[in-house]
Length: 48
Image (tube, rainbow, N blue to C red; front, side, top):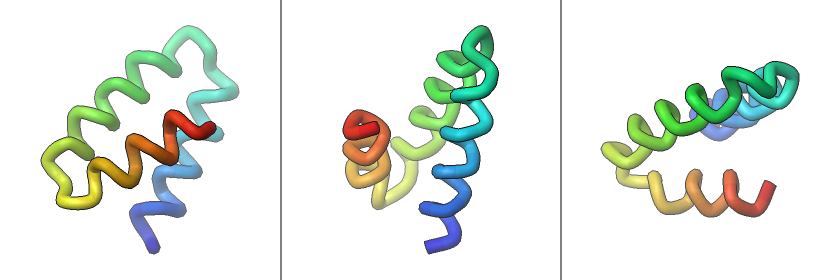
């Protein structure tokens, strides 16, 4: 659950910074792809 809360924090932080949001989100996705739960996090991100 820590990773989920961290992902939410990252999302809210990026939403405040439109210029850097895409870069940060893409880098986060690349990191999550290595994670076993990457699919879940990507779906959550798309849902948002």
